[in-house]
Image (cartoon, rainbow, N blue to C red; front, side, top):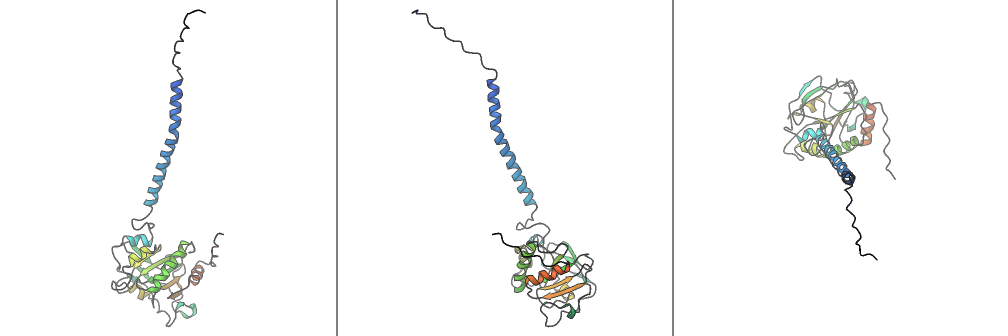
Length: 258
């Protein structure tokens, strides 16, 4: 056997495609990272958009009574009243009145021109062109405190008929009485309808013939009184009366999922 050494192989020339393959692999590894970054950016942008759609006070939606109350600068405000006052509420009556026994039925509501908690203008009048429910509330009234969350929950369930406008009037404000100030109460309850402030003399309430709290005035689209109510009103009766304004029957109660 020969003692000649086996020749060593020369290193092969570098594969010109090996670096390209590595670069492609590196880029493919970056794809999930890029997708993740894009997704994170979209989530953050969505969060910013969501937060910007909320008011600065307590995360309530802009334009609602609660959002305006969060920026309160006043608890009462001057009110201009025009038109004829409504007749007094029937003596001794409670709940929703019988239209035949209420002298206000068929009469137009007086126009109230005033402000809300943040000074923004607000008007309640017969020319709204839609059925209305005007609710007079006192912050210290126990029945008001129990009714407001019930009505708000009813609204949140989507049971307020389309085209019917609800407006509250915060009246009989007294810093010496419980649950003051009303703005904090309205904000805490997440109340969505607009809120007008009555003046310190409760002039708006007097013009509407208020007998006690809470006080409800329901009108047709021409601003004429259809029905009034005072005190605690079961939500089923309230719903029936409000749906009647819109010419609807009461919506069926939702059935819980099994």
